Length: 284
Length: 228
Image (cartoon, rainbow over all chains, first blue to last red; front, side, top):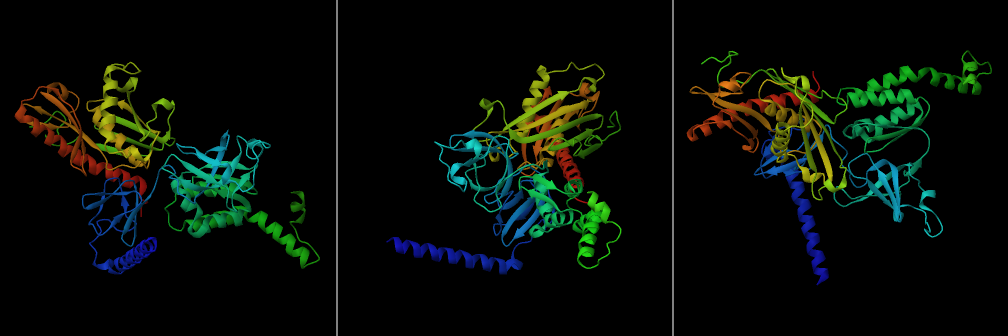
């Protein structure tokens, strides 16, 4: 009996997948959208009047129609319509990397403030090393006030957020500085596959850690320049050619330092007679 | 009929809406309807303190309506009054229906409405500003709420009473309207009106709400869509 059930559910899934594929292929025969992809919508605006589409994130069904719940930009993936919000507090998602501050220690874990209405919980089971609570105080692992970079492991409704340190990127952050940006602008700051943040890190040689919740930690060289770049992205996230603009800004601001170190390195390796800027570098 | 300020009977006062006027708030808007100016600021959803006020299954919508002391010719005594208390309540109830409060359990969404200049219709201006500010804050909403008042002067149904008209009219009917759902979320009446006129006055007000809705949408677009 149980075997039969499994087979049935598998056929169901394959059927559903096939159906979805067909849906995507048939996209041209689908009813026309009232709002196209990347169009701006306000709450309550009708995006499509059809049952052929499915409401995704930040949308809802109203009769036959799909309407937006937020100010944002329409995004269509196959039959699913969702809205990419332009503003708003961070909405937790499983798998997101977030930055938070430990605000309380309980018998079996830590309470972490992640900058939204609800605090997150990092249970003992969420950290990698084994801790014997009869011998070790939890505060010796993470103490109140510590900043941690961790992953959302489990969500049980919007007010029960569980964290875990079970990821190579997770760690406690020491020193440096912390800043808050609007969580809706974090995807812009990170860029496609991390292109933007990687560029800022490479060009400034600053160590930056971006949480999906809009909390950013940075430490190292050129912090002020990195800060300026982040501020610019937060202020004007939608402008065209943002990456190039930021790249140009970073190049013009960071250049002197970069060339100095490069010159010394190359001259030391290739030419026996060092040129101009070396003493300055030594001074730093 | 010509009105005191030269408007047609079914014409709103000149409306200007500015979005994002308060940088420290999550969302904000200023709505000017003629000489009435309302500024709304939205904070949250954020942690609700004290905890006994938290609701288990949804957020609390906390609306605070206030007239600043210099908003009228006669100084307004600061602090809550009978009138402001009532307006806080009706504003909250006008907005509660559209804000998806169940998405933010145990939290609070604070809406502060300040009337910085009053010349009739402050509650409608306040609701208009609050609704735009809530949308600007990126809070989940089923729709925007637009609001306008209507009345009857002589034989005519007039929209958006201003200044002295409030004294001339037989009644003042503020209405808040949810355009997407074609529903009314606020309906009050001050004065007397024969039953057969009630619907006509409400319809006049709804027409005004629809005009207001278009202006709210345009203002949000101007704030969030890059130009050129």
